[in-house]
Length: 71
Image (cartoon, rainbow, N blue to C red; front, side, top):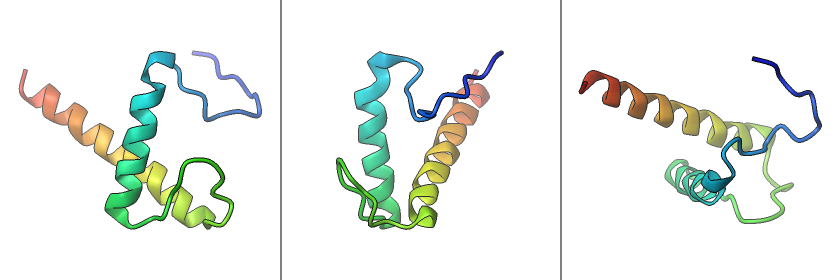
């Protein structure tokens, strides 16, 4: 697998999933109390933004583990 070192590392690999990923991101931010909004979020700390991404990954891994365990 090759990695692209472009400046935009936040691109969605499957374009059709972009809207669902944005909704998921907003749900996670709400769950953990990060005041994320659509558009500019420069007022948030890197820790706040990072916690959203980290929690998204955690939830995706948990869901994948559940699916694998049920097979």
